[in-house]
Image 1 (cartoon, one colour):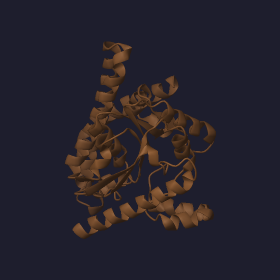
Image 2 (cartoon, rainbow, N blue to C red; image 1 turned 90 degrees about the vertical axis):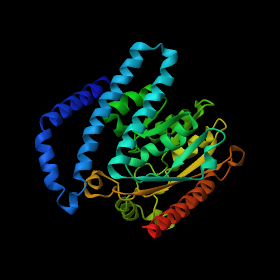
Image 3 (cartoon, rainbow, N blue to C red; image 1 turned 120 degrees about the horizontal axis):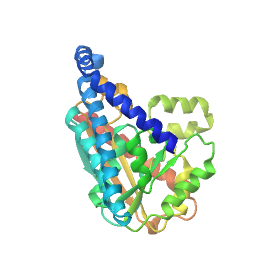
Image 4 (cartoon, rainbow, N blue to C red; image 1 turned 45 degrees about the vertical axis):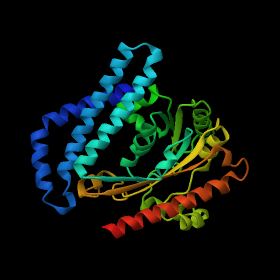
Length: 319
């Protein structure tokens, strides 16, 4: 951990100094690029990147302040407040730069017991949706299952480890450990904490969908069944349900971020003027099955696909 943080913090320092020194040149190049339709939102992307660096340093400063200023028993809530602030700040910046329009339905699912939250994953931007539109709205902690690559971002690394989250290795090199870690995350969640996992394990793109079809012919039926989703990685989800201390299950479907899967979309206008739809629904703990869990989860993923299809159709008809 020490070596990783020494490396990532050093890279952040170098990136920040380079960004400041090169700002005049970068601005000129960005403005020239923006004359091409392929890079029409390059100015927004540049602003976002510089804003991200600013919020990285601001977030790290806040974590250091909490560590130095407050006793240990007060630090959890303070760190959680920084998590909400950091995510909200980045999202607000994106929303203003790209003129995003967010609509939420299924708000009744935001009421009630804490939950295990299963969310669709199709974009860099949707990582903050559960935190802001579920956890923050409910004013409760939201534990995350995160990919270990995100530890390369110092603020996420330090903040993520100071809150009860789990960073998992998605390579499958030690699946048993990963399943145990996420199950323990669920089992130890307090009565005031919900838990989030992205069942697909990675962002959906059509390219990944097609690659799965080529590399894993046994998944053919599931890929046909879920054209806008990747098949669930069942190990983690079933382990978390088995360790569930009494929480409901909440699903989050969303549409509108399909054109924002990677950094190229920041440059090419994939986010500009996007209308984004979110829809939640809830399954009470009393209705969660003890047997045939896979069939239950697949039925939930069928509903996720149907909901995404409906949301996409509505967005297309409104455009």
